Amino acid sequence: MPHSEPHRPDNNATGPGATAGAGALLLSGARLADGRAVDVRIRGPHIEAVATAGTLTDHGTRLDLRGYLLLPAPAEPHAHSDTALTADSLSPPPHSIEDIRRRTTEAALIQLSHGATALRTHVHIGDGEGLAPLEAVLQARRSLRGLTDIVTVAAPRLLTGTAGAGNLAMLRDAMDMGAGVVGGRPGLDPDPDGYTETVLDIAASHGRPVDLHTDGDDPDHLVRLAAMAHGLRPGVSIGPCAALSRLPAEAASRTADRLASAGVTVICLPQGNCSGAAHRGTPPVPLLRAAGVRVAAGSGAVRDTTNPVGRGDPLEAAYLLASQSGLGSEHAYDAVSGAARAAMGLPGVRIEAGFPAELLAVRGERLSGVLSLAYSRIVVHRGRVVARTSAVREYCDSETTTLDLPRQGRTDSGPGGGP
Image 1 (cartoon, one colour):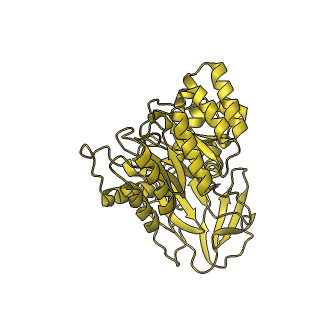
Image 2 (tube, rainbow, N blue to C red):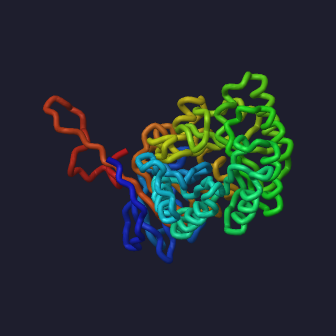
Image 3 (cartoon, rainbow, N blue to C red):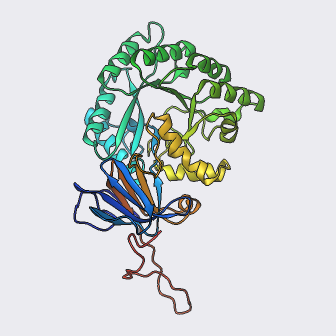
């Protein structure tokens, strides 16, 4: 059974858990998605050199990645850390600052073990809870610094009229506290357009991106949102937008064109539901992509009441996009990696000199195989190995088989010993 843990530095290690000390970290013999076998030398938070396998010198810690596919690390663009891991809790679940901080930390480490080295999480504020959930997630962010990066989306329920005045003031306070993104759910407000306009105004005044939670069941509202958001920097994302797939083809196509022209990113959730979403499933991803909309994929709920079995695994999200939406493996993986990082305002990652050392090594040889069956993983964040998951596959002895099956005690399968 796979076993995951955050890695504890061991500067003398040479196996899959090795991390760089003061010198470089050399990833040797890794295979890239284009089929090349390479050595990758990392110094500090960036890739220093990439060359043919066996040609780079070892001036620090060496990590043998023969048998692994090396990829840009995924990122998680749509999490709900404040409600994560509450599926088996009492109703309502414990909601103190310490409870939320602990759950946020555990959920972030689960997602890190899957490969996500950055995470954007929606956090509910206001309505009696005040800013306590945000403070709890910010505490978790500080405690996890160096292992993973967490960005918070402040998400009030109401913003307009007398009923929303308190939340409006609180949203401004949340920006001052350190919330990185302005968000919320326009569909819960009596005036969705007014809510959206308020969020966009606050984002513009604070220089923050926008990430709005919407089912996408009102195409006219999305068209108006696109008009209001046009040209806003640093950017606007919406999701999960599952109801877009239920619209007539003409309405869905018109909406996709407007979102594309406004530069609005759609973040879908192939693994299931998330907090407050009324519709399950994914939007029409091929249609959106054909219109020029950037489509990223996130996990949504991680074992809360809306998805008690949510895994928070970006490779599973990519697998579902490939198997259900018909995307090629490369495009499906980009939705959880390159497109997800772009939606979060993070620098792009390529396995080339000068790029951030945000990497995921997965046992396997081809991307399609990795999306199909990926247990053993090694995660690099800011140039350090920060998490690893190892799996060993064994079969019982058989007198009739002539196959060379892996069995307990064999050590010739290399680091990880399994898929």
